[in-house]
Image 1 (cartoon, one colour):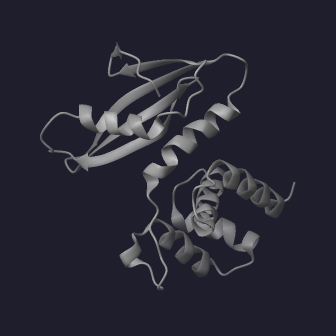
Image 2: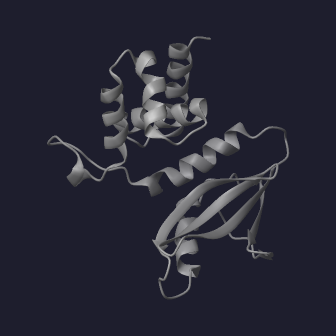
Amino acid sequence: MSSPDRLSSWKQEESTAFSQLSKPQRLGLAYWSIGIALTESLGISQISALLSPILQEREGTVFQRLREWYLDAQHKPGDHRCELEVSRCFGPLLRWIIGLWAGKEKRLALALDATTLGDRWTVLAICIVVRGCAIPVAWKVIGAHAKGSWRGDFLELLQHLKGSVPDDWFVAFAGGSRLVRPLAV
């Protein structure tokens, strides 16, 4: 299958999984995700260089499109620009992954994790644990020195996932090193 065919197929699959997004948002997500998958990198320059010949566009044009995709509305050119509210993607992302789940086993392990990035940020994440890998499906970035409990933040993230797991599935939650009480996801 040629690169344009793979890109077209990927865009179609993402359009189905993330139908709540606008067409430009879905297109940006498709370009970013297939670029990351093919380059095995998060670098915008590498992804732009890869996609430029496939899209038959100048590398600078592709770079700018990728950059504008993640900016907030006030930093995008044009009159009708909106920003991507990433939390709207959490439930669809979890449903998409479950739909791709191999086998007939209807069990899911979710890990609640907090990772501090230097002394500036803490990333709170809910991840699916699959074959020794953790795939983030919901996250929130807070200041590294923010006061208070993260419980409310994790409950808010779980609310975004509510209704995304079929009722006949068993869901286990792991928070840190202990199993926590399962909640309806």
